[in-house]
Length: 161
Image (cartoon, rainbow, N blue to C red; front, side, top):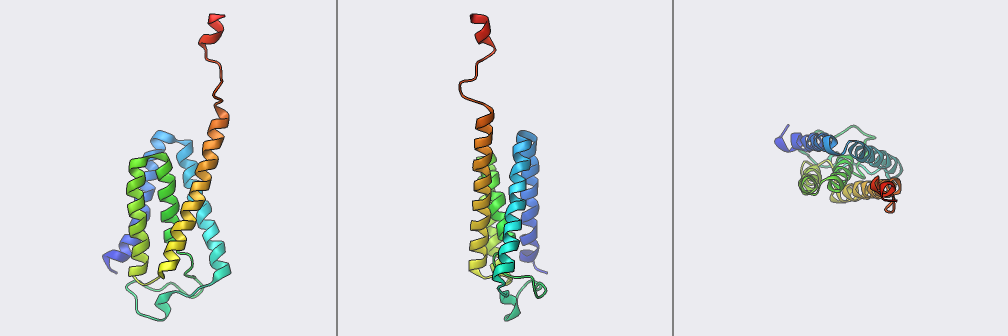
């Protein structure tokens, strides 16, 4: 097993650490953002069942062990998780978001380099994950705005009357 193979899974651990760090500041929003990653993964699994594309490691040598038959290539689940995590983290914290975006690109690239995915698998995975997390972030933002109306009276207003 090479450092690239280990790195593809280690990046997922980095995202988990970022979510944990953001949980201390954002609590519910961080949990819901993490749930977006789970939703994106679920969507990815449904797409895999429909498309059923074989992996490149079935026909050529690869650095990583080729997953069993029936574990389809399109889209890359690692890339879906990376893309959705990066987008969710971006909405919670811009600095962490930049770091997460770089990690997502590295994770997706590594899946092609080790030979278990095609380039279009990881591009589709990054896009799918980012879009699902973006949609959830927009819904969270609307929900939060609906809970705190702009014209809400302050505590001081009744005292001034």
